[in-house]
Image (cartoon, rainbow, N blue to C red; front, side):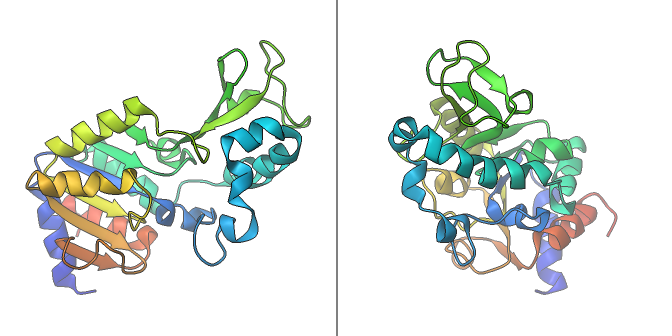
Length: 249
């Protein structure tokens, strides 16, 4: 990666009228959260069919211990890394309108980001499938599995999108509308493989905007789509880029 590419990326963000960030698993790997896909990913160790909503409803005693291990024990220990913190600073400085994330770990909010669209939901809330109430996950003890609903004793489900579940319509609509109004999309840690979230950068591009990409590996965005592709670790490159945008480099 050349200094020229970094300078170009900084100039694009400095000149943005409305910039958004589109993030995926790659931004949280440096916080100790494994990706879902690829070698060493969650789905290489666990059967994704068990995280299909109907299967979960039929076999909660089997699935809940897996949910606890994968999504609460691991994610619960994770802390924001320099990439999360840098994006929060960019928003605070008025140079980032929002983050649209495919992640369910809540690390953007933990880093201080205020406007975050969680495309696939969040581990931070639970929903009762019987009475429809929502609860802060931190308030639900996981010493008894499945954990009973505090209101009705029914089945609690983490409020993220299981297989066969639709994307939350309000989030999809709001994120898409914002992307269509944006003139810069900063992609961090995602190759856009999962739809419909992966179309967000295309909405910006189709509206005449520019795309800056930070990824460890080449993706379907990298060549012929992204205006600038910065290859490397998010925890290194995002703070460097934000420093340049804010006049510290």
